Image (tube, rainbow, N blue to C red):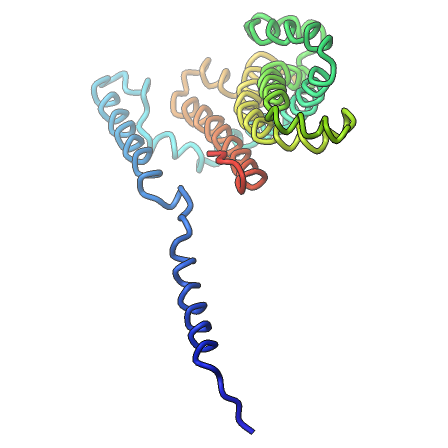
Length: 286
């Protein structure tokens, strides 16, 4: 017994089959695959590298002040300096990540408390601004005097630098909820905790991830600054930079700075990726 398919059904199947490739073709490509996204930074990098060669040649006998890129890259494969730089970088990575986690937890919790109680915001937020305004280099000697000069003191420096962006961006996100949505929850007689959990925190997620991305870069700065001043215990990348500076080892100095900078870029991109994964479907995180 044979079955026949109606012309309408076959036409519908053909339309579905032809619509699938069109839908796939209409999907926007990721930004990083577009030449307009990566070509300008690559072109600027080429210009900067060419400028380094020009400056090195112009300095003549003092060319050691601006080593050529291949001299800097050779430091990473040197059996003596390469492991030294990567070991110091790993110490700084641990300091930065621990300080960042503490800053995120403190910042989000502090912002939630200020959002729940206006008197907490009026009482404590001015001190958050003051904390951000104090030059960290002026506070570092006090931190060393009170807490020593090892790992714990470096983490405190990271927390002090990375805390304010988490507080300010999280508080901004919590307080920027649409007024109409607030009125809707009010009509439903939702409790304050339900409003926080189901409305304010989800709406604040883009701001929270933006604060994480900003604080991540600042935590790297804090780790390097802490290593630079607190050189007891395991030496971090900041301490290594200070050592190379005192010895006038320019290629090693530039290699250490480049390693710290690349770590900052990586952690910045990591939190940007996490933000896009978390809220990218309904918010243009960038």
